[in-house]
Image (cartoon, rainbow, N blue to C red; front, side):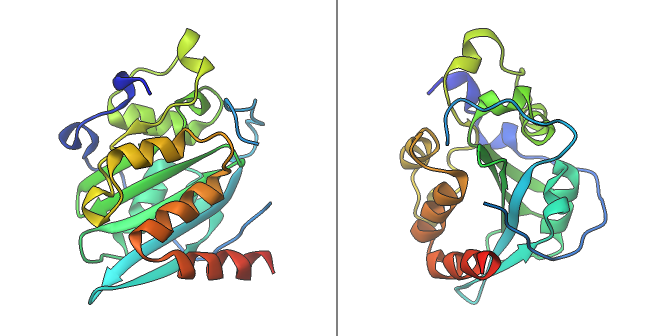
Length: 199
């Protein structure tokens, strides 16, 4: 994992522009270095939100178009404040995922695979938000996460474990997110949400 793609909390926090939001959910069915993308389609597999109230997690689906653009996604998360911030996940093209943790104007972001920034606008927007250079050359040859690997550390998922999860080429993004959900304590809700969408 290249250290240049990992940023500290202060660098990865910040505000994003507002955009309209609605809450619906939609899910469509290899990992590896990010495959070439069809740029006329945002390619969002699914988007979801998780908030904790009175110590209990609540998981909600989001309309896939809310994951098309980073600003829209973050604005939607701000509409559902929760204890310790609101968590959001977007899976794109079965290649990568974006995780966010929003508390007011404070934003923490994680991109599971920097190589996808070359092909997918959402991934590129995350890199820009983090203040990092877009990957190029040999940086595009190896899967590596970018952003705040400590994003879930206080919730029970250490940075090293999260990095290993992102770099596991045998897992699809929905499986990676499922592993995160299980470690944070809302794995059953996540599985039920996905099962419902697939059914």
